[in-house]
Length: 134
Image 1 (spheres, rainbow, N blue to C red):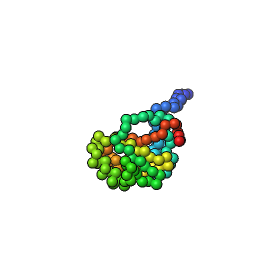
Image 2 (spheres, rainbow, N blue to C red):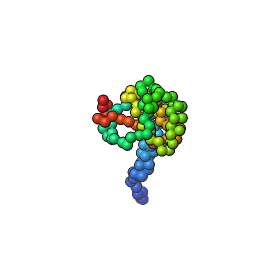
Image 3 (tube, rainbow, N blue to C red):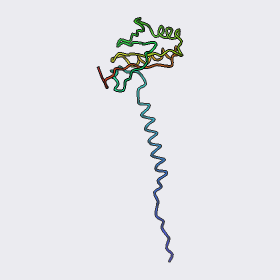
Image 4 (cartoon, rainbow, N blue to C red):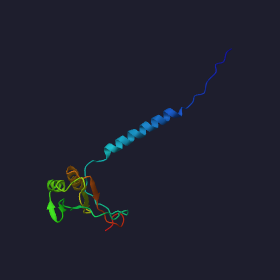
């Protein structure tokens, strides 16, 4: 009588790691597509790491109703873009001082207007004193 030798099964760890990484990447990709890509109204918080920066050349004030103001003059986005385009945009430093209740989409539009004028140095003003500081 002949006995067959039975081999014990092995659990391969490398294919399991491959499958787990694939699942992780899959869930990350799904989660990224779930994040809305449009601006939402939100309270912009203060920053606990705010620091004093050199005086910017242009300060753009953004108000809750969406209008913008530069050097005391109310401007449209196209007027802002033209204004910045005439002030050596590659050397111009722009700081956007948005109101705490300003719409984020309006903030993005102001940033787009600055970029379309050729400005590359754009900063956001924040109040010192922590998150939600007054």
